[in-house]
Length: 149
Image (cartoon, rainbow, N blue to C red; front, side, top):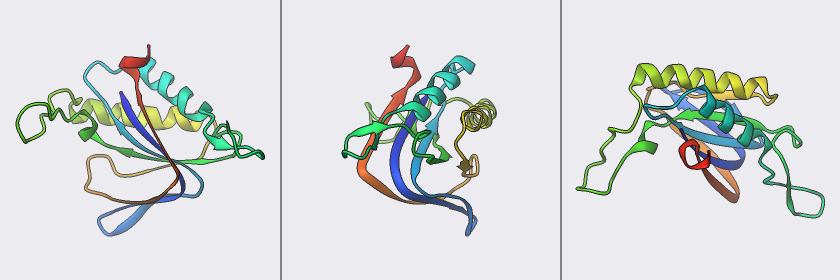
């Protein structure tokens, strides 16, 4: 499982010309799944995300978590995180989970995030989307469950 975390002041996603999700201060997540991803990957990443200390405290230090600042999450499915571009000029997506498996994981993951406290807005799985956000910092981090265990 791979997640790109971008700290933001606001974020919104549109699909089919309509806004389907929006948040204020918090994290905009791009979320991708691979074949072997399971519940342990989802739990590990969900716990990491809500507890990352990347929001500034009163002294301007990145010392507060999403939970402590009562931040929100916009979670966007992104199979292209598993695009392999090492050979040729066209990405190979063989490492991405099949859509049926990835969609189930995506919904379970968003549920786990909600269970931990923050409000979670989402895009539409498998749809073409337009994402608009203001990266705060900028702060951008990459989590990969297979490299973190």
